[in-house]
Structures are given as structure tokens and as C-alpha cells.
Image (cartoon, rainbow, N blue to C red):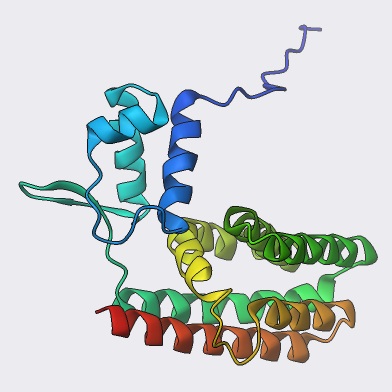
Length: 225
């Protein structure tokens, strides 16, 4: 019998490019770099401590994610997020997340519910610490679990392509002081419906959450425009 070999890489090394990419992505999402800001290569190489070739790779990746625009005779800038773009993102989320929450509530087992509760508490902890990066990461993990338990793998692939812009909107709206109901409370209602295996309730909770978040984003973005 031929000897079998495993091609699995057990400990995947994180490259310098990946580290730099995550740093710049977070800086845009959390508002360290504001919409319309020029991203000067020299400044980025100095701040990140990497080469210009790494910075150029990072810019290409973030352009593909919709976080950076390249303007003629000006170079890369932080993409300006308009309500026209945001509305399309919320419409896609509304279609995909309502059905995912519904099917998650149908499929969720005890271990799935425990994981969602744990991730919800991580969001709460990050909120108490005013740690926007951790809050966004924990929110993304919560939704990834929701889609996985729902068995909506293709839908999650679509959401992942939008995740950088979703995270940017999430950072803008989650902690907004004038929310009628806090973002964490809205997510808690989704989780509570899944805990009860109540699909219609879960679907309704997502609808209410995204409707309020979209209205808030519209208010913020149209004021900026």
C-alpha cells in the first residue's frame, strides 16, 4: 500500500501582509482613518513598520473589499460610504439574515445556543470596555455561528464579501446614543428567540434590528452627505 501523506498545515503562519491588512482594515472600520482621507504610502509604511510593497498589497485588498477607492491624480482614499451604498447592504442583509435566523432557530441544539450566548456576552464585555474592534469581531462571530447553524453556507459567503462594509456600518450604528433600543439588546432578542427554537420570533427580531439600524445609518450618512 502506498504511504499516505497529509498536506494539512497545522500551524498556519500569519504573514506581515496579513497583519498589516488587518491593522489598516480596523483603522478604517473604527474611524481612525475617516471617509475621504488620503492614504499616503510613506505615512503607512512608517506607521506600520513595513515596506511599500506590503502597503501596496494591503491597498489592493482593501480596494477589493470596498474600503478604499483609487482616485486619478490623487491615489488611494478611504471610500466614502453613502446612504445609496448602505441601503443596498441593509437590503441584502435583511433578505439573508431573516431566513438564516429562522432556520437557525429551527436547527439550534443546546451546544449551538451555548456558543451564541457566549458570543453575545463577548459583545457585552467589549461594549462595557468601549473596545470597538473586539465588539465588531464578536458580532461577526455571532452571525457566522447563526449562518452556520442555519446551514446557509452560500449566504454566508455572500455576507463575507460585504463584511468589511458591514463592519463599518456596524461600528457607526451599534453604540449610537440616540438608538431607541441598543444594538446589544436587539441582538439579545434574536438570541432569545433562537434559545426558544422560535423561528418566526427570530425572523421578526432580525427585521426589527436591521430596520432600526438602517434608519439610523440613513440619518447619519445623509447628514454627512
